[in-house]
Image (cartoon, rainbow, N blue to C red; front, side, top):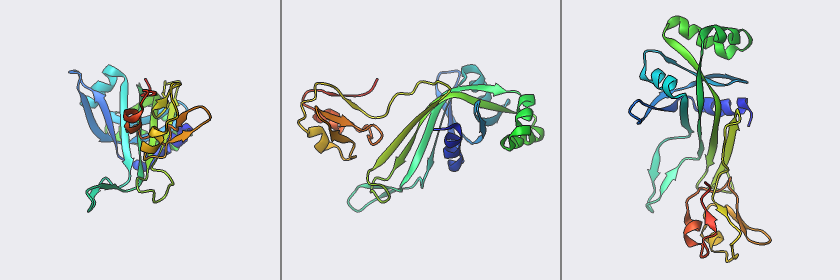
Length: 223
């Protein structure tokens, strides 16, 4: 994915959950939103008077997530739960503070940064941060298969050479092709190849059902 595609995916959601680690080692969350992007990364703002600011400066790390769909969970007559089709997006990475003179220079070439300049003029404690290196995932879901022919589609991405591991469980070489994993999978993620079965990580929910029924222990969780 390009940096524009990543930004647009999160920007479509709007308000996002931003997570940091406080001085006691516990995670803290708050709602915020992204304010722009360029080749350096994706940007957001906070105020120097907030704990959020101190945690960003102290750790240099951030994790954000959001959901583009109704957040309502409906219980059906048969006891199952219904989730409106949509997608979730998440990323984790390294963050740095960008001083206002640099933001003003960026605003001359990129109108997305004009708001950052105006907001700092309104609120002098407002500052801008850039997530420069990160990895994440877009998790598109349609559990009732209303719009897709499978339940989930996972797209992993990384930026700035941040490490990212593939999605899904994996099947090792000691697979005996018994087919139990294929029959157990309700996500249509497992298919047969010449010498064994294989998991399509982009369709795998990592539910673990195949892992439990494999008689040879050939299915493993990616490290």
